[in-house]
Image (tube, rainbow, N blue to C red; front, side):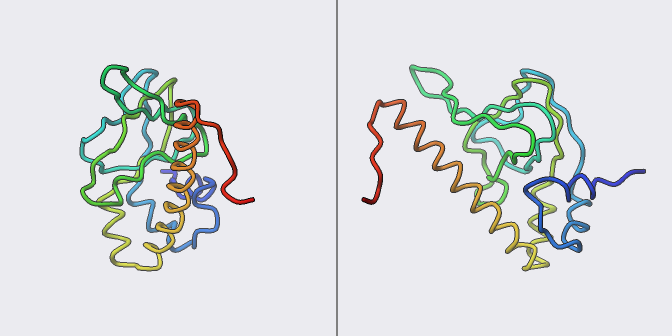
Length: 158
């Protein structure tokens, strides 16, 4: 039986991860597929996974009363979906839908939290990567909100 370790190691999110940490992750990982139009998760549901997107496209959206779903971001191959599994109260903050047939590797959040608690170097490596991803997502959301409300962008400095 083939292992997911080389696929995980080759994913951009895990580049530079220590080999011993990659070996730990495999036991928390599984292949998943989502059909076009499938709901991956809904806001306020328990967040117990994160995904490495291998193929396909996923939309992150938030429901706005009176307007319906508002797309926050679209993710594709090489990107990571989901960070709510890492932070209490472990609830999703957005909805996620597969725009097209999507293949991913799913990681069990409870399994990973336990491994991070047992190996603080692994936990630190995760926090570094997820903090960077969250910053990028917040910046993308900020820019989208500026566009939504027609606010002119000005540089912060200079």
